[in-house]
Image (cartoon, rainbow, N blue to C red):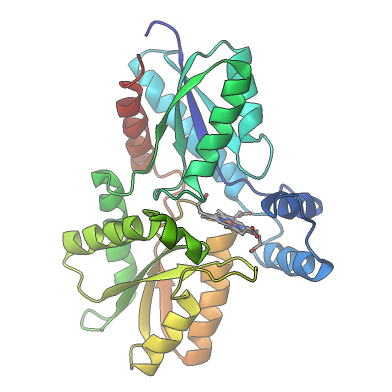
Length: 307
Ligand code: FEC
């Protein structure tokens, strides 16, 4: 192609101030305002991680790092746009900008490794729906990148580093975690749980890890049944079984944000401390240059499918 290729980088989004928490939460809840108790609870969690989540800054750094790398192949060959699921600039805003800029062909990438009909697919649908309304661009989507060799290397390195916090002969359980989803995804044949397992199994194989398992975290505060086992229950079960050393590898997330900084670093840590367990977690990928190299390579490969 002789014209610039658009790259729509999509991420979850976060409120930019405590005042934005209510509209953000209402958006996540599909337009239903949270009750005052739910809202207070969420505001308290943001306060506990310092008031706002670092997610916006990290997502922006990831997007600009990807653009920088892609344009090594020729300045202006790629133009990166950032669209968020639940905060501005929203996915639809980014697609409007792409159409205004005359972008006709684009690749979409979600900053989450595992595909689910309830996560990645909903991002893609929003982009496709807006593009259909506007006539351009036409997208090819990156569905998942959970087995990319460099992603596996990065997680493997991080797990090895985290294990160094324990004595060399200590028995340590590595827990690979991801965001829980409503259990009904199972009856839809959703690949999400299987993909998390594949990521963890491949990392474990690469570094000869045998004492590992999987857990779900951050389940929504709704009445439906969510995928389990929940990570807090897994910690209790490990403790009951005599295992008190744990490394959490939140493999479903790529950045430091509420679900890592609060749900793992504060909530899991509190449970571990209450039980007298020793828990650490792997460092998030954030804007690690090797991670951005990997994502750029994935986009580039997918761009070859544009005709
Ligand atoms: O740092 C931040 O401010 C943003 C952190 C954040 C990330 C994130 C990632 C995922 N979510 C996924 C699914 C759901 C489903 C519901 C849901 C609810 C919330 C709430 C907050 C929140 N999520 Fe999230 N999620 C983040 C934040 N999430 C806050 C609302 C309060 C709460 O329950 O804690 C339930 C919606 C409903 O009620 O209908 C479902 C999935 C991911 C990982 C993939 C991705 O990044 O897209 C899946 C980051």
